[in-house]
Image (cartoon, rainbow, N blue to C red; front, side):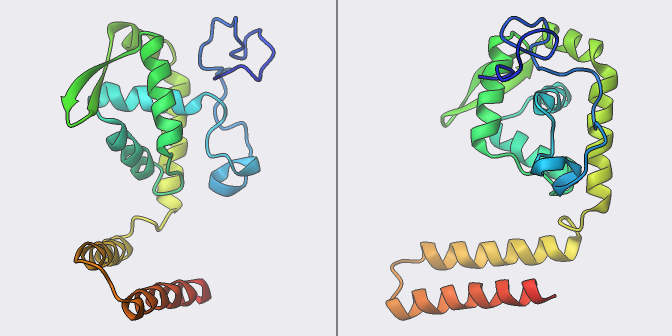
Amino acid sequence: MFGRHFHGGRHGGPHSREPFGFHGHPGHGHHGRGGRMGGRFFDHGDLRFVVLKLIAEKPSHGYELIKAVEQASGGAYNPSPGVIYPTLTLLEELGYVVASDAGGGKKLYTITAEGEAFLETNAQPVRGLFERMADAASRSTAFSPQILRARENLKTALRLKLMGGALTAEQVAAVAKALDDAAGVIEQI
């Protein structure tokens, strides 16, 4: 699944000794959305380094890791569960993390000694990834206090309205119009 689109050798192929497909030079000088050409924030394999480093700093659940990556990148990258959970499974299969039952169907991921050794061996590329994420965060306004407050206020109001019971057709139409109007205003700014 991971690293298999490379054709073996040192780039993370199926028989590679580098399970993350990382070839020692983060950044590569690409530009585009999120600083990456082709719309990718991370190069192949980079997210696994980031997730492993975050787990080393604090044992976490998958959802916490999604939020930690989003926050570290200043909102420039928000990994989906469909990206995070397979990454966690791979890290577990490689013996770099262990998962324990945290209740409520959640798993708490903790780094192993092998994972710590792997991070230490790759300290420079990992540092480069976090520097790139910090740079993206410093240029991002996604986490400005005013926008965060307003976004959370909207999410709370919407959640309370939708959980408050069945809405009439008129209420559904009014909520949809208010959201569409807000989106239109934001697009025009």
